Amino acid sequence: MPTTGRPSSFSPEIAQRICLLLMEGMSLRRICQLEGMPAKGTVLSWLSKGKDDDAEGVFAAFQDQYARARQVQAETLVDEIIDIADNRPVDDIEAQPDTLHGERGAFPNKEWMQRSALRVDARKWYAAKVLPKKYGDKQQVEHSGADGAPLPTPEIRIYTGAPPLAGSEKEVDA
Image (tube, rainbow, N blue to C red; front, side):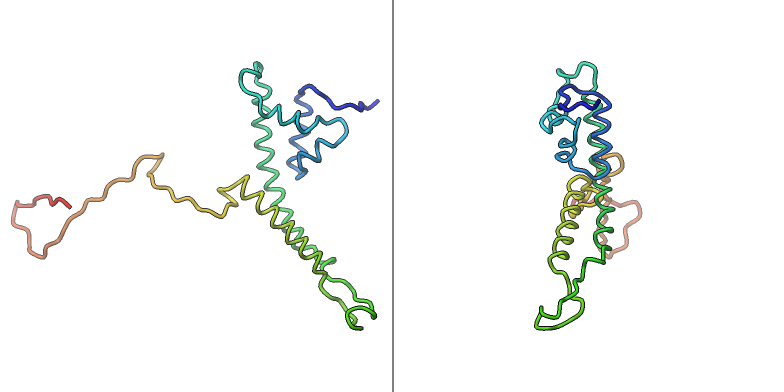
């Protein structure tokens, strides 16, 4: 017999189901509306538990699992962008003879096209926020060498045009 109430205690099975549904592209709000799922506030409280509240480490494990699920969700939503863009059958509408000044034929369904553009933009925005290194607009320039070490200072030599005297090279302060 299925339970009708929302579970109030954490379980690894519920945590895994939440993460699997997230990875399929479902929002946390919609997941928490499903039967047998905890309220959104409950899930958010699990995610905000600190080390003092988590003696067994189950919440820390859920937090890591949730973060990875959100990254996979971003990839799933990026894949949906192609499906949305390729959804051609509803891009045009067939005009009736009494509409559009008696013209017949297929005309662009502008409302559907605008909604599709909004869906694509929302997915691009989300992917850029969750995976900024991969999908973000801003590129960060690294000013360090390997493993964060400082870049080596180049040696600067000033050429004066005169040939150096034998054994008389001297350093020049720049």
